[in-house]
Amino acid sequence: MAVQPFRDPPELEPAREEPDRRPAVHPAGHKAFGLRGRHWAWAAIAVAAGYLALGVVAVTGAVQILTREPTDAELRRAADAEVARRWQAWPAGRIFPERLTYLPGTDEVEYATRAGIAPGTDCKSAVDASIAPILQRHGCRAVLRATYADQLEGVVVTVGVVVFPDQQAAYKARREIPGSPTALRAAAFPGTVAARFDDAARQVGTAERGGPYLVLTTAGHSDGRPAAAVRGKQQPGDLFGLVPQLGHAIAQNLSTRALPDCTSADWQC
Image 1: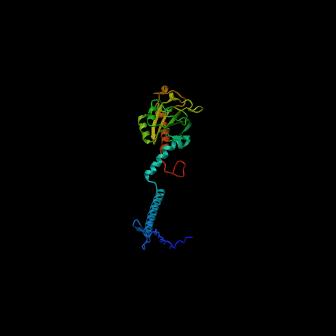
Image 2: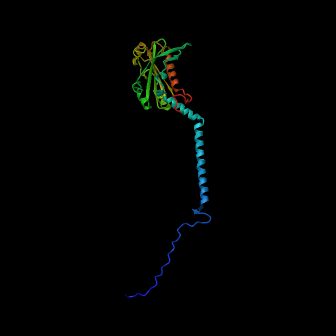
Image 3: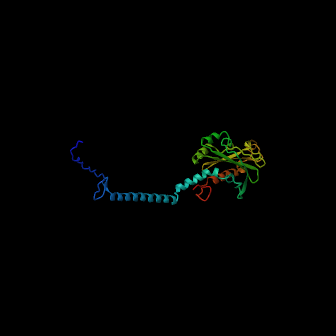
């Protein structure tokens, strides 16, 4: 057997040391964007304090707005809005009370009694064709009608409330509509003193604006006699003195502003 000469084992290469990849720790602390850790802490505290101050200011402002007294302008706007809603918000009996007072030419007060309230509210059918386009042009929303009889039940008066979007529209319509006996159509109610009052019996009429409302009236004899049969035989003012008074009472009732009352269902606070 051949004998191999003995050889020294190969020399082993020394193990390579891996470089230390951990970030170096500086004695004064780590920097980012030129700021050290403690500086970032102070910056965070400053930002938080700023947000806190803004929050306090916002809450304080909101509390002041919610608790401050309303301005005169805000009160007027709220009052105007409440007036404009009355034709829908009020019951019919509040718009047209069961009885209205008037002065018949003496110091003694008399009462006009309501005969009925018309169910329809259409702008076109409640007035004559001569003025229907005027109402529509200015944005008429509805016409509410009721008929009253004087205390002696010899005269009947139909009162119509024409509803407009605002006071300006009502004012413009009033300028174009004369107070005439043919402006508002008569509303008769079977079984009442006003059963025979029709358009042919209309003799006098008035027109008065109150806020966003135009109040029209038309009146005649309760027996339904045609206006042509009595025209020129008497002074209408002597017999129909209550007509403008009733129209004024309804207009004033609907348009008089009230102070806001958040406890009432009429107000939205």
